[in-house]
Length: 263
Image 1 (cartoon, rainbow, N blue to C red):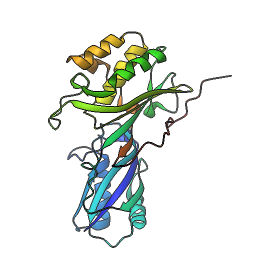
Image 2: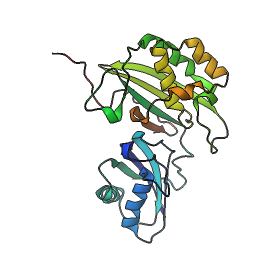
Image 3: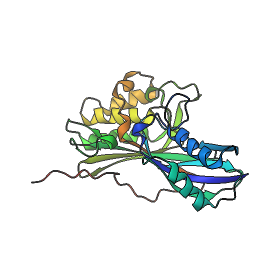
Image 4: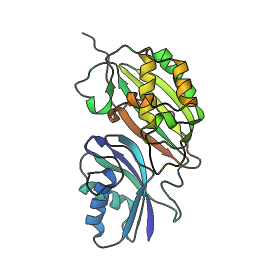
């Protein structure tokens, strides 16, 4: 058996998330189908670094593949991509150490969320359009509160696979780029719908409907209220999965340009 490390990008609009499901089209399931076409009856194991929700995208998901093959990584990448639909792409495949595990070895992950200040004809699948004027400074002040170790029970959907709701947020920042507001958040791991609910609450702060004190309350007390503000999956991207020794390259740009309108 050889172990490979795969870097994958996908546009999640047509998929019910990453993880393979029996009765739904998923990204992992689609790649497994392609691998089955290549390897036939040869046994293989293909696992990702973690789940992404239905409709969520990935700029760089990581997975490992165990399979008995003489194919070089570059040839394997070409063969898989030839069988994949347009919205899933293997960026790179490389040989990995036999004990490398895409999920267990990951030390942190980062997500980007894109909010559009205006209606767009081209970016609907990649942003959340907010009609109201947003107070960017207020959103920045509230975002800082999420940094550090917190119990995110108020921001997470119930998930039987998650025993603890405590998450370490290493960095969180906001940035304006023409008519897009970008949120980048990096943490030890993320619970189901957590990033989308953080985004939704920050938007409510930007609308001046919630305050810094409200955010503090949600972090220190359980509240079901953030669930009402869950942001849609369209604007969410898994940006990067980090392994020991890896750092951000400080690239923090939108995936689609939405320029301010001018005559």
